[in-house]
Length: 257
Image (cartoon, rainbow, N blue to C red; front, side, top):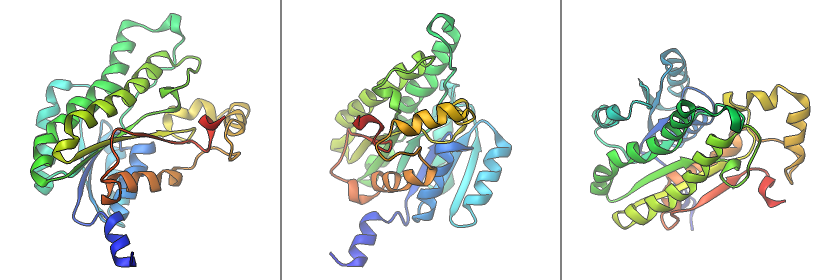
């Protein structure tokens, strides 16, 4: 395979991706990776100032637009998807990175926090992605990338609703694959290990827990956001066209032990 053919398989020139939860953390990083690989990206989150800053930075090396919206308002997801489609006239893929982890003990989990966590982490990726399925099918191909977690398969203290939602993401990814792959739309998930984001502030601010997390890996360190670039570009590109319904753990060997 020559270099031009290889670059075509992994390149994203002419593609459009919507990335949720992209004002910071993993969503922000993944939007940057896709843009650097040639895609135009639309980033979505609640915080407009952070979105504007992220968009400005991404536009220094790629192409990015942003929409400030509260994804927890499920009745507005269809209109939000319509807004996205108007920007670049199409959407080739969706990255569902928006997430919430209330970090409560099992005894302190309320109905409100349970519903809000399961809605944003599990329901929204399904209902929002579904808004684009018919349009992606007309293109002949589409990519859905969900964000799973170590807690998709491990139970950690003070993470019950979050863990349930992320366990559900793996099954949702398989179910999306079963429903839509015959229409050319693949669905896969990335399960990061411990990375420095707003959701993991409690881990990384404490030297003991930060070192504990690093010690659980076979590599011997915690993740850096750039470690997610390969998986993000692979699942977004033509190179992964025969891979669907899978969850890839990018965790430095945490789950290998």
